[in-house]
Length: 119
Image 1 (cartoon, rainbow, N blue to C red):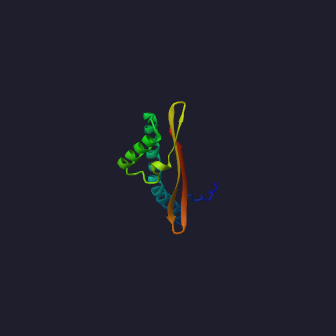
Image 2 (cartoon, one colour):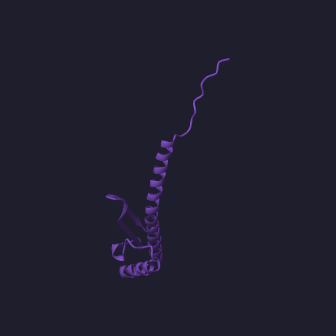
Image 3 (cartoon, rainbow, N blue to C red):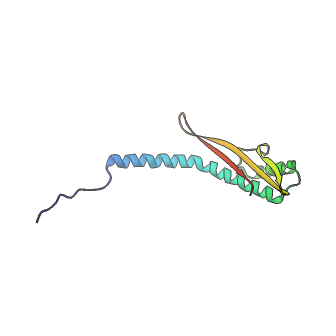
């Protein structure tokens, strides 16, 4: 009977260090992006609540957003003046768009363009 040489499989130390660095970088990037995503969903929820309440005027809608912004401290990237407010079929439609620049490392930045509207 002939014995064949079995080849070991697995990950080398260099491979382990490489994948560890990739995962660490991904974790740091995720930790920096996650608050921005939460802010977007907070803004989206506020805009939806305002549109559902169907304010009578544009200044009333802007004032309601400012009131929500005072309660929700996570909203920092947008103000009530950045909202585009219109009426469609007797319903208030609110849309917004903004850019968020996140410092990654040194001269490297991540630009995220957010946009949304009331549903």
